[in-house]
Image (cartoon, rainbow, N blue to C red; front, side, top):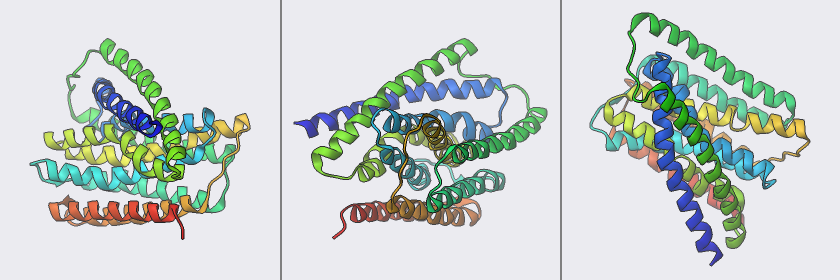
Length: 322
C-alpha cells in the first residue's frame, strides 16, 4: 500500500511540475524576450533555470528537510545525464527539423558544461565540501552569466525587439506562482522518493538517479523538444547544456554553501564519484557526436539512448553489489 501511495505521489508531483513548468517556462521565456536576449542565450539562462528549478528544490529539501543530501546529489547527476543523452535524442526522433547546432553554442555552452562536470569530479575526488566550495561553484556560474551577458549585448545591437508571449505583469506573476508550486511539488516528490526507497529496500541513490531524475527532467524535456519541433535548435541544445551547468553549479553549489554556513554535514560516497566520472565521459561522447558537422541524426540519437540505458544498468548493479 505504501509503495503504491508513494508512486502515486511521485506521479502526481511530476504531472504538476510538468503542467506548471510549461507555464513557468513561457513566463521566463517572455522575460528573456523583454531583455532582448538571443535564442541561444535565453535557452542557456531563462529556459535552463526554469526547467532546472525542480532539481534545485529537491537538492535543498533532501538536505534541509530530510537530511539525505545523497538523494539530492544523485538526482542532480541523474538529471544531468538524462538531459545530456535523452533530451537531444528525443528532440532528433520527434522533430522533422535537422538537429544542427551552431559552432558558437557547442564551444560556449557545451565546453563550459564539460568544464563544470570536470570540476564536480575533482571536487568529489578531493572530498572538500565547505563554504569555499559553495562559493566557487556559484562564482563559476557567475562567470557563465557574464559570458552570456556579453553575447546578449552584441545581439541587442544587431536585432530589433522580439514580442514576448506574455505581458510583463503576467510573466512576473506566473514566474512567482511557478516557483511556489514547483517547490511545493518537489517537497512531496523528495519525501515520497525516500519513503519508496525504504519500502522497497532500494538505496536512495538509485531512486534519485533514475526515478526522481527522470521526474524532475520533464520540464527540460518539454522545453527542448518543443524548441526543436519549432526549429529553434540552438535554443534546444543550449537549454540542455545550460540546464546541466545550472544543476551542478547552483543545484549543488547553493545547498553546499548553505549547509556549510548552517553547520549541516555533507557526505559523498564512491558511487557518486563513479557516476560523475561516467557523466564526464558521456559529455565527451556527446561533444564528439556534435563535432561531426554539428549535427545529430537518428543513428546517433539511438546510440545516445543505448548509452543512457547502459549507465542506468551500471547504477543498478553498483547499488546491489554481490
